[in-house]
Image 1 (cartoon, rainbow, N blue to C red):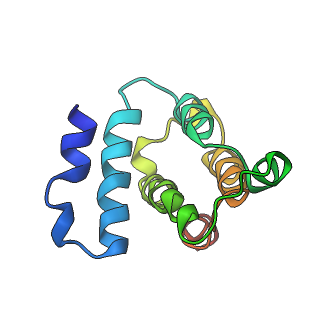
Image 2: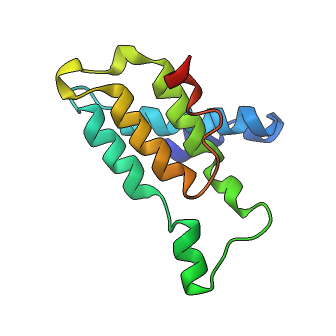
Length: 121
């Protein structure tokens, strides 16, 4: 309930990119918890992703048109946490490697054009 309220409040007046960022911030507030390592958070993120484009083609259930934009907030989520390294626990692993793995998982469904930027800037 908290996620839905946080993600959807005022959504109707926002443009697409701002909507994605709002949903991404709601995702971050739900997935990040004090003491939870980034590795655990990103494992939950990766597990939340649906079938890859290749898996969809294999089953004949390919998302068409704008359906892949479902993942726009997922990319924005990776961008948000990639820019907020205050949340990272260095003992939990290299944030670059962890975020890169999640970006690879995302690109099997949608673009990582924006979410990869914090890692290469």
